[in-house]
Length: 220
Ligand code: MG
Ligand code: ZN
Image 1 (cartoon, helix red, strand yellow):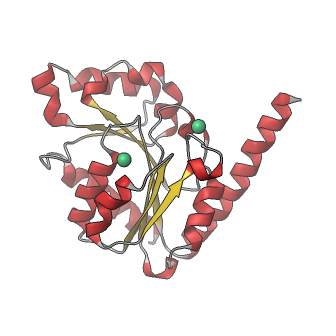
Image 2 (cartoon, protein in one colour; image 1 turned 180 degrees about the vertical axis):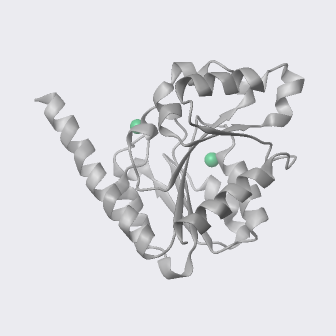
Image 3 (cartoon, protein in one colour; image 1 turned 30 degrees about the horizontal axis):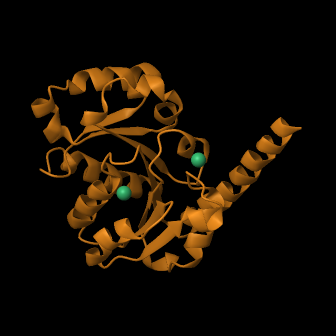
């Protein structure tokens, strides 16, 4: 009985994710779902990305259990921001497709090319919930250690793109990004891996090129 209920929840999520996907397609929007543990640098990456895109008809849906702190950090970009605080809807430690559906009601979709979704910081269940996005991205920051893809395989299996973030900290902390990369590849041989530092800008150009080319491919 329990198993049946859980399955229904995931089925319901999948149906709404499909509706979101349709809505993105109808409006020629590329949707990017950023996932990672807390503190891996999702907001920092978004900050640098919005700088690089110079606004770029982008919007952000900010997922957090509590607070609007990340939205406040990004407010100076003057892009549309929708905050989703999951504690007001049961304290979920991840975003679900229905939350994105509600957030999309708050956005003028015709005016947008890209929607970035910052998921709740959590390396586990966000990977279980399809939001209807075009690109699922995991961030793994160098200080977290090379073993994380092996310990949390679903996240790295589900993401087409894996970003090794905070690359500037690898050398000072004596961390080998090559080992992190090897472990991501062990879980997902097809993953595109990008090493970058949003702080120094190192590697940001490949990330921005990826977003632009995926947007063009989708709307070709
Ligand atoms: Mg954040
Ligand atoms: Zn969760």
